[in-house]
Each structure stands twice: as structure tokens, then as C-alpha cells.
Length: 275
Image 1 (cartoon, one colour):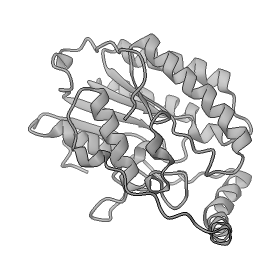
Image 2 (cartoon, one colour; image 1 turned 90 degrees about the horizontal axis):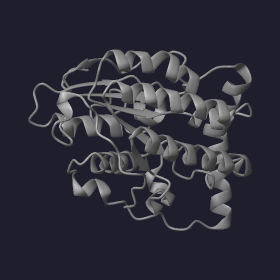
Image 3 (cartoon, helix red, strand yellow; image 1 turned 135 degrees about the vertical axis):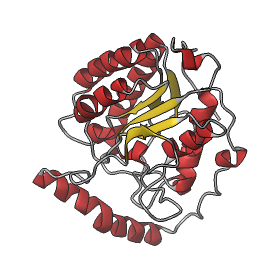
């Protein structure tokens, strides 16, 4: 399981005295961090990799607190303006930041502006003493339309994330370098969000990166599906376009977002048992 990135610095807060032992964790971002498409066992909302990480960090630590501020559909500037100040005010020992994916799918994507703001944002979060987790995106260009447009943007942003992470001593989790993410079974039916197996794998990589043992089963990827015939692939693509691509395009044309009526599922630091 490749995990790339330079050696990271440690936060200077007292709760980072022992590697991996954090009293609090705040997750910041969009649908990737909110947990789509990993339904909770009780069917009430989504779980996702961040909840799984919090569950491990909370084990035998009654003082542990967790907040998840991520909201699906959020653009990079919205994440920085709305979520980052809240996360900093909570003074967590560990904070994760993932954003920019929704921007990359738009024609107005301005990588230079986003990368400059990413650098300042991570510098600010690290300046509080928190440990920060960043992500290099997995390659989605083979499953999504517009691959010629998307792939160069992913390359630019992934390179920047690696550089910013090294510059500020953040933990960089590289999903790009994990070949298992080419397995369709790690992705949901919309081909954009992770499946439960995909979220488990991300959680395992995050925990490994911050020096915490994880359930080894989380790294066991399901067998890839059987190769479909040409006709079956075309039928599957047509169904996907009708059920997922067309609604996405309609939202773009009407200026709407999948997260317009959605709020953060865990807006305040609280024990994991509290929803």
C-alpha cells in the first residue's frame, strides 16, 4: 500500500506527545469527507472514512471529541471560508482537509488561485499546532467523461498537495499511488464517490500515515468485477448517464448544488457516541 509524501513534522500541542494519540479530530471538506456513498449501519445518513478514523482514535479514550464539518458539493473557496475558521476555533489535535474536486469538474477551474490559497490555509492550520492530513486524489479519469480535461487538473493539484504537505509538515495520503483504487468495487454506482470498501481503505491509509494501527481487513479490497462485454458496458454507461450524469449537468446549468439544503452532520466537537 503505497503512501507517499515527505516526512512530516509534528504538532506542537501537548496532546500530540504520543504519536497517534489525539484528544480531538475535525474533518473538513466535501462529499469525500462527509462519507458518500457509505451508508451508516442504522441507515441514518452516511458514515465514511473520517467516522471510521474517529472510531479508532476514540477507542479507550473517553475524552476524545470529533467533528465533521464536510458538506457534499462544496467548492474549495466555500470550504476555506465556511469550514476552516470553525475548525481552527475548535483547536483540534488532528484536522483533515480535502477539497477542490468539485472545482476540477468545472470549466472555470483556476488551479493557480486554489493552490495559492491551499498553501496559506495549511500554513494557518499547522500554525495552531494541529497535525494536518491531506490527500492526493485517486485517478478518476478512466471512469468519468472529460478525461482529457480532468487528468491534467488532477496532476497539477496532486503535485501541489504533495509540495504543500512537505512544506508545512502535513501528513500526505496518496490515493493516487494506490493501484487498488482502479478497482470499480471501491467506488459507488455514481462512479464518483467511494463505496464502503473504498472508505475503509482510505481510513486504513489515514491511520497508517499518522502511526495508528488499523483493522487489516480494511485493506483487503474486494475482487474486481468480471469484465463486461462491449454491449453490456454501453448499456451500463447509458444507465449511469441517465441516473447520475444528467442530474449533475442539470444542477450545473441551474446553478444548484447537491449540498444546497445539507448541513454538517457533526458541526461541533462531541464524543463519538453523540450524533
